[in-house]
Length: 93
Image (tube, rainbow, N blue to C red; front, side, top):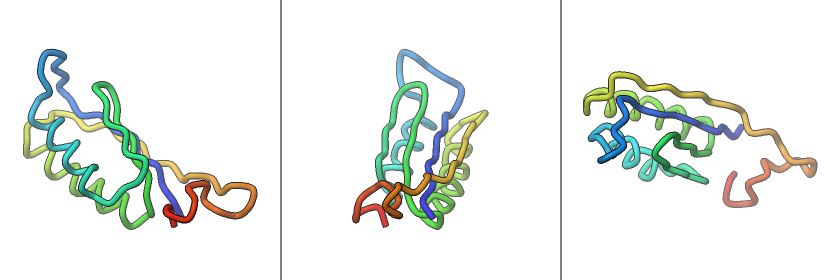
């Protein structure tokens, strides 16, 4: 199964990324996730169930330790394509 993770960390700082936001970026970029998109108001990534769940645990531990006061996240199952693949091509399996 393939999952899509969407998350934000708070508090926001529009002038300079806070430490918890930098840690969040480091976690998702180093977790072996696919389709990572990190932005100022939301972040997304995809991967296998095991990889996403491990990344979420690491994300929570590390961002809270770095000063996040709130972490909002959503995890969704990525629907399979009509041809029976996960829609991510061979690299996504």
